Structures are given as C-alpha cells and as structure tokens.
Length: 306
Length: 306
Image (tube, rainbow over all chains, first blue to last red; front, top):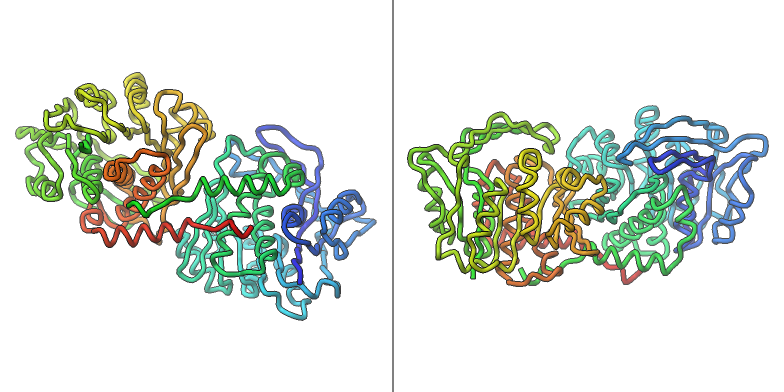
C-alpha cells in the first residue's frame, strides 16, 4: 500500500519583485515529494540528468521518499525553466524552457511500486501520465491528476484521454474555463466531471480552491499573507498535501477530501513564504499543526445563533 | 434599542448580459432595509422625490421599517443611476447619474431614533454620514460604514474624518488598496485600522470577504453560483445582513461577527439571483435557513484526523 508520485524534477531560475535566484532545484515532483513526505512515505517516478545533485536525491531518501524509479541520464541535462513574476504575483512570463531529459521521458514503474494505492500525477505530458496508469496491474484506489493550459493547446486529445482515466482533476480557474469553454466555474466543473473525473478541484491562487463532486461543493480559503514571496510550486505543494492526507488516512470520503484540501492549502501557504522549496523543506509537524489551527480560526463559524 | 440605517433610496436602470431593466427601485438604503428587516426592525433615514412610489414606502413599513426620517421632496426628483455590467460581472460602466434630491441631502435624526444602538451608514457622501453620527446624543454600540472609491477621489478629507468615527469599515479589495496605498490586503487592513476603525471588512465579490480585527482574520466565501444575474445591491445587502444579525443578537464579539458575515454573504447570494431587489424581497426565513446550511456545507471541515 503506498503513494506513488509522478512529476518533473528540475532546475528553476525565478525572478519576483523581491529578488531573483540562480539555478535552484524545482519541478512539480520535487515539491510534491517534499510536501507529501511530511505525512506518508512516497515512491517517486521522475527523470533527471547527470547535472542533478545526488545530495538532493539523498535528502529525499532520508525523508522516506523512494527514488528507485527516478531515472538518472548521466549524459543529459535536467529539465530547466526560468520565469519572471509580475507585481501582482498572479501572472508570470516564461523566460526560458529547456526540456532536456523531459523531452523523451518514458516512465518505468518498478515491481516494488505495484502496491500503489494512491497515485499523484503531477503536471507532465498527458501521454506520460497515462502510461503510468497503464503500467499498474491493479487500479489504484484514487488517481489524482494535475495539468495545465499548455497541454490544452498542444495535446488536447491525449489530455482528454488521460482525464477520462482519473478520479480527481486539479486545474486553476482559467484552465477550467479553457477546458470546459464555460465562464461559470460551477458549470465548468459539471462539464469537466462529465469527461470522467468524479471530483474536480479548481485552484484560485490567493482566492482559495473549490472542490466539486456531483452536486456537492466545498471551498477552502487561502491564508491571507502579507507577502507572497514566490508562488512557484504552490500548486504542486497543494497537490502533495491533498493526496498525502488521503493516503495517510486511507479515507476517500467527501468529508475527508475537505480536510485534505485544507491540508493542501496550509502546505501551499508555507511554500510561497520563501524562494523555491526552501520553506517547504524546513517545516515540521509543529509548524503544520499551528498553521492548520490558523485555518480553523480563519474559516469556522457558528450559525446556531441565527 | 434599535437599528438605524442611513442610505440612498433611488431609481436604477441596469443592463447585464442577461437583459436590461426599465427604471426600477434601488439604492443602498433600500437594499439594506429589505435585507435587514428579515432579522430586526429598522429605522430608515433617506430622501426621495415626489416621483418615488408611495407603495414602496408602504411595503417597507409593512416589513417593520420605520420611514419617519425618509424625507419626501414633492417637487424634486429621486436619485437616478444607470449602469451596464461587463461579461465578467465584476466590472461595470456608469451610463448616467442624476443626483437630484441627493445633491443637498441633509439627514435629520428624529427623537424617536435617539435609542439607536446599531448604526449602518450606507454608501453616501461622508459628510452626510458623519452628520448622522453627530446628531445622535448617545454614541451607538456599533457604527458600521460602507463607502466607495468615488469619495476617495473627491472628498478624501471628509472620508478620513468619518472613517475615524466608526467601528467597522466595509470596502472592496480595490478600494482597500486605494485607501491604504498598499497592494497587500493584510497590510492594507492594518493601515486602515490605524485610521480609527477597530474592524475592517474587505469585500472581494465572487471571491468572498475578509474580516480583520487586530491580528485576527476571518474569511467568508461567496456561494459558488451558476450565474450572477445582477450584482447591483449585493454589497448593500451584505451590509444589511451583517449589521442586522448583530442588532438582533446584540452581541458584537468577534465570533458573532464571523456569523454575521456569513449571514451577509448568504443574503447577498440571494440578491444577485434576480434584477434589483426582486429576489431579496420575496425570500423568507425558510429560504434563509436553507442557504445558511449551504454555507456550513461549503465551509466546514474537520482537522481532528490530520
């Protein structure tokens, strides 16, 4: 019984109004693994080049992240992305993308991962995501998929096929509108659920996240912060917290998914406090529990007096 | 002991992507009174022209809204506003404004209103709002003030004076940024609280509302709706629900303000379902209780399992 995570491990170079980084470790899979390993062991599937630091893999191993299925292509280079955030921190320009090892990534699921009960498909080419599902002999109890507008533009058929295979789809609000062709997020959610997933999570950045299932809906706020220092990886960290809570508790009821979204929101609120994975790798259980209590204060109310 | 509401009573003509109205009854004071009268009696202060329908005043009287201090200027015309909403329903253009009776409105607080315990200052010229406070012999237990960017542009000194006299200020997110000069809503709230109000509510439309008090913060979601049919009056209705719940329960603790914001959000979610005041005047206690239960489903979660 385990949580399997598929996602990029990468180098990023980030510019925000607060400063810029050199080449730092990033990638959806990296953020998900760092976050999820606070709650449950992780079996990681990814690919890196010979330039990726062994120390990073060792640090993840020490966190109970199994890197057996992280391919190391010694003579190639790791995926690289650089971007610049605008003043509002909600929009960014991609300055450079070097696919490198990600260009022909063919994930291989080892025998030791076949006990997969929870599968997190981080943002990647949808054909890569579906190949992992197809390699699993038993369907996981829950498959969660993250994706982005890029794949809607260049691989819509592949994307729709993969979406039809998963239980939970995560997209942001503009992606939900693009995928459904509907401005109303309530109707967009219904349209996307008709494509296959029984659950859809619509991420709205600083405005929180919505979870839809049938006619049920749940809303999780984002923690109001003085500054969002660097939004990179916040969505991946959110995904990691969401699936890790479900994997830890082995409960996929709608009520437990509500809690899982709050866990994801709490973890994402740490992620944006520093550049890259810096904050998410230094926090522990006490920090997380305190942050979750802040979410209770932020959200809970009593209508018995009305 | 009573709730006193000051606000415009007006004619509106509204265009949305769903259609357009002729001249219909509107105005901040009208929305606040219709909403608040579901919870508690209201003493209304306003001004209308000879063209304003007596039937509208009678309908409010039948709802336990005292209109003694609604001045009727027989030979003048009622305030008129017309506007057109854009596709996203978050932005609108003002097509026409005729101040008419509102141009030289001098509110008069009658003796029978001197028991005012809760005072709601709907959006009006800040000098008009402060003149009501100054006419009250005893300071109310709670003064809530709504305002808008227009007054920041033409009457900032008056506005700051009035803000310094109230307990709770309500503005939307862009107004909070304009008033404070800070993009971060968390810092904007601190800056505005330093101007006098102990509480600030920042309304974010479809993204909900934030309540700040000292270092405490509460977030109320907006109900996700398939369609926002007409946003006119949603902020006023929110204000009406907020102060009416507090006036009814006579409890101004932070915890009860949380509940009051949810009540305001629930009432606003009705308001946008039809043009003008149509929806807000047809609902009753059962509708409101059912909507409040939807907010519990939408927001509540259990972190005891984490």
